[in-house]
Image (cartoon, rainbow, N blue to C red; front, side, top):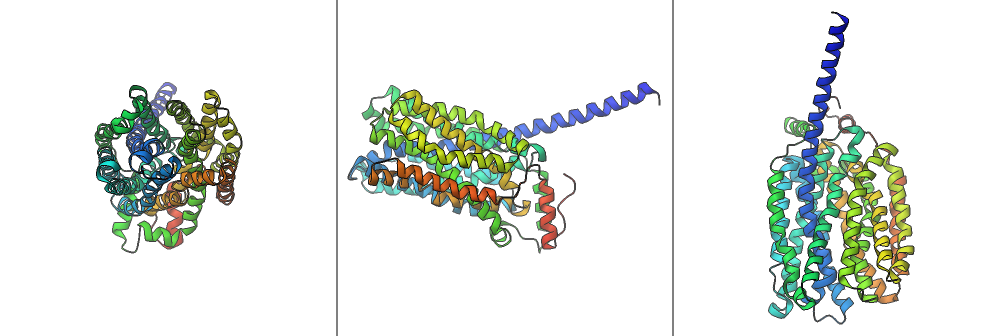
Length: 468
């Protein structure tokens, strides 16, 4: 073969590899888009409830509460029901997802949460049907939370299991970035309603429009999710489970074999979850009840913060691929502990720019913890029980963390008439997460197939697949 022929052959081989790489990247982008669209839908609806609980539900569904803050606390208690339902959804859909696949569970969850949210917008208030109003609200909130409990694990694993080892942090952070997009849309719709409607009409029917609009994006999200495929590593793990009757999967198996992984995931989640809901929910309560701050101005602050949050999350995911999972997460926990001590004094100035700055910085601190979660948690568990493992670690924590954070913070504010106890509460939560991060094994660049191989050797199973 001549030199020119060899060069041509080498060039052809390189072109083929590049074409294959571009095809793989294109396919991964489609997977990311499918996961993101569905997650936007799910979290638009879930966070819509959080904002409505702060602004509307205390008046519409709990008008007999002793004070405005009492009504808000009652609304947040129904909000907490969704968090209680989430671990149950994580258990059920985790079991289904580990057996049948990530795609099928994601199709079911998006329909469930969409139907529940649309019906919330149709509920009559307390003045119309009495205690049936809050009772039905709680029932729909439970269904919504149950569906969301199965959503997160499926969405992030669909991406994580398709991602290259060296860039899993970046790619799997995109479904996380979809969360502020969903929140952004919910805030934008509510903000529009408050702008075009007088307060009495917004309380009467304007808030319902945001819930009804969910039907449109549910249809779009469901359609896109019908066009995704399962990751090869999952298909191999499922074939192994079917071939070897001794190979178990799902919730009971992950609790029995990987309790340390579940506890580690819960510790990672604790401060992140509390910090987020203090920022996006309790901030509204604080400014509205303590300073009677304009609702429209509050929503604008959150709107800007959500845009920045969306931009920052993938970049933090990329950073976790370069520096490691642990140092980035640790920085988020340490900085998160400091947030309230400068944020609330900025809130007390009532300066719109400083309020926006405080909320935005808080969400950037949050992103340092949030962006890397899918990669870290997926690298903790083998494929045959990964959906159950990440769902349990992620969703069970929500009961003790996110669901209670606005309630505890509101109760502390009511009792002490000061933000300082709230700041101490956040600091304690961050200290717990710091301990979890320090004890964590660094998994940057880990091969999910190697995680499966270690599991197989440890429990005397046949290895799943070969290669990376």
